[in-house]
Length: 443
Image (tube, rainbow, N blue to C red):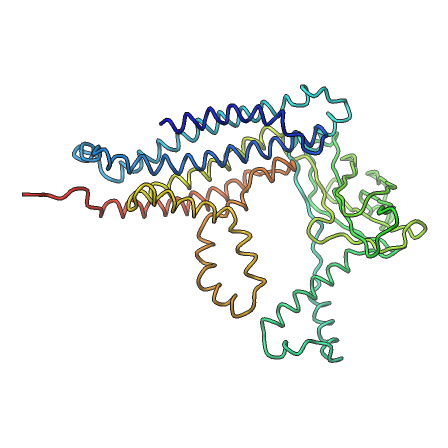
């Protein structure tokens, strides 16, 4: 089809141009991240549009050109016809996705060479981009007892809002807000105080390499220069706590960093104990700081360590895009069995764009009033959950931030998006197509 040729030429021209035009934050790492993010997103978006149009047109054109009559008169069953169309579209997607992925990967690898990056920038790229790092977030603290104790204290002192006495949902939301407040207090250090995070099952891929402590903190009162001094200890502190013999080193770091900005501390991998235990200690030095330092619950602190290579992670990201294309191909085949070409394309585009923002839609309704939320939970929410959550399975989120896209995650996405939802779409397509009247018998 000409549209496939046009899309191919368009991407083969745009991708090299994007590698030159997009500069990101000006650094080599920023340029590479920006190119991968926009290059892969653009390729995925255009392939999704192409898949929708081709899958629908492959069936509807047979009716328009009367070719369906010559095919179904042969010993070909209707479900075989649909499966043949589906396999053809998937084969086209595999070829084009493989081509565009190879172009993006090649340009990404060679960008640092074209920019004549220095050794420091190349090392930063190796540690923070050309890798696949597993992320261990800070362990969650069980604050249920603290929340109940605080709630009873507020109830006894008559400080609770009056509307809580008439609505169980309002009480539940109020306790959730209290839980967030208590959790935040557990991740705050006043001057002179320390915070300790203990991680288990830290398994760096190479003990000769490093792992990273990624953090960002906020403050109760902004310092004059918007910077905070800090002291860090990273290692197996059980050796100090229990007076054990020092088998692994404990590293100390003195830092001064801007608030509300992400930073990474590089730590040699030999700081991890043999059983995978690792402790991270933060001290708010009172001689330098006069404010409380707060680590946000979601992304305040996490441990990153190399778990795989960039090439393997990139392959899994391309496969994740392929799963999306397979689902859209099945959706297009289904729409073509009972809708005309323009209506079917519009229907699939609505499903596609809704799936792209489905995570935001699901979360947004949780903040509405109790009456609206109740109606939504039994009407719109089940429909939205049936749709694929493309934003939840975004490959760029893994590649740009060098996060490990594991085979287990890919298998889960394949099971949900293809094994369940795409298969159900094809079953519905076969049932509808089998009952469709192809031609009337006239005597």
